[in-house]
Image (cartoon, rainbow, N blue to C red; front, side, top):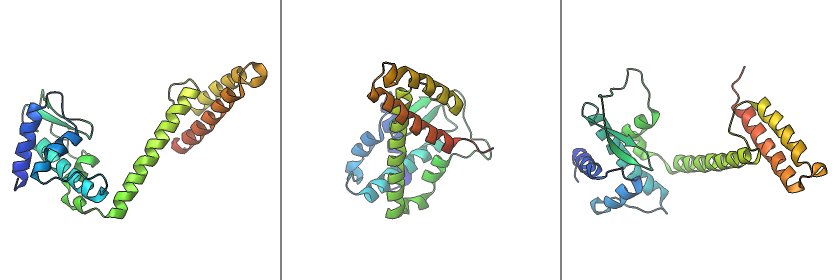
Length: 192
């Protein structure tokens, strides 16, 4: 494929055949014969190919605005869907992800910035898993109400305290969960 429109046309045709959508991984594999590399060991090369793919997908999405189709884009699933009415972004509407991929200058992101993004992703991923385990340990649905969490923690502390029939393991688990959630909720609380 020698130009942008050829790749966009290929993607559109491929997505029309992908009932239920297709993953970024599968699209990249199918683009290997057209010069797309797929090397997980080289994060810079992988980013460039990911960026080129998403750059073209977002251009396709823009081309579809005035048609009967819309394009959903994320790394897990890329899918054409019927569009009941053309959706034209409102003036001033900001879609940071779309804007990032439509700006061709971002293709030349340096290795240090890429490494920072990857590290940030894994830190947030680990944090999300930690929070999920903490909510499970406290037997609660996530909430932003720290006072509610504290009340529930006190109730569980009484229930699982070793002097009241609970085990040390249970008691320590809810204490650790409370520390995790308390720290997180204080950091994310809106400033007054």
